[in-house]
Image 1 (cartoon, each protein chain N blue to C red):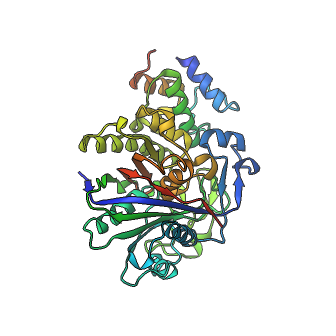
Image 2 (cartoon, rainbow over the protein chains, first blue to last red):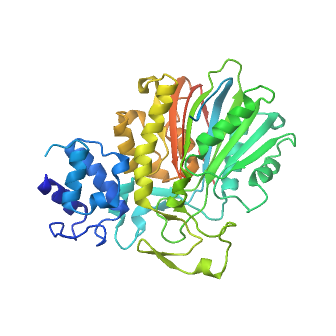
Image 3 (tube, rainbow over the protein chains, first blue to last red):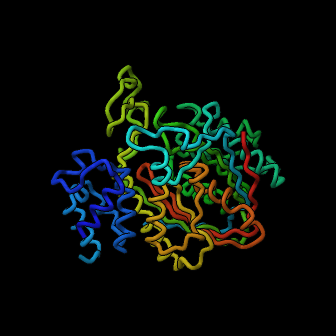
Length: 77
Length: 344
């Protein structure tokens, strides 16, 4: 799952290294515009529908946070 | 529980007016981070109509004149005028009063204005329908639109449009079924901070501030994209489902689901949450951008022209956005009249 997440992030913003252990939001790697695209791509890749109430910056701050978000919304590890 | 059913009233025609001038996304650098191709892929917006020499009321008046003429309505019989916009001609008086005169409607006319954005057509419909449902007045016009760039140099989403919806009393018509909602705690999710009475225009209103990496003054609209996105994809499907549950309807009852044209990714997430097939959810975003409160009638008039005029059609429409405010309406039309697009 981590590799799929990193690939989606890298396709979205190839100029950044999403394997680094940094906060994607605080570092300006992802903004709200990116999150809209990211959620759409995650929904389609993992066959889920992420709940709007989970669209919070902290849920997109790292690969691990995104993984937890996906599992919470029904994605299989 | 903001559910309403208003009977004995129906929509008989819709017209839209836009500036002739086309602004193509591919010709503009959206911002430092996104190129035009990325922006088109993300928003679905390839072009918009923009011309700041027109106000919202100008476009709505053109649309109304066209619709009145096409329907052969007698202006003296139009006794209800509802104008919905966030871009009035003046801070005061109400632009609805000015439009009554410009259209040469009767002075025996109820004219009122609603300062709503993306939910505005649905709210305006409820006002007009309420006025007409008793049958004491027979014909009404709902004029809805926005023609204002909320960020002078960087706004890549907004398209200008003015629309007119003709509504009339019709004994026995099934009318409209509504669900409405409001969450004012999100008032600042989309906001122009200065210019109202809370923060009147001052010298500091024109000073540039850093907002999410963009320089803008306090008379320009700023948006918390994450909050708006979260709100849109959670609230719109819920409102549609609530309306159907309350009024015992199913999505299969409807020929079309018209969503506020926010952004293709947001609207597609909503469509998929509702398990709707793409043919039931038309978009006008590609050609005309986010036309704010006008986006639902613009989508009907530009995307369904030729498909609904000579038949019975069932609609479910949902507007959602600034306020935060949202509304869903279900209605049917018989031989809906759609005027040719007015371009000025």
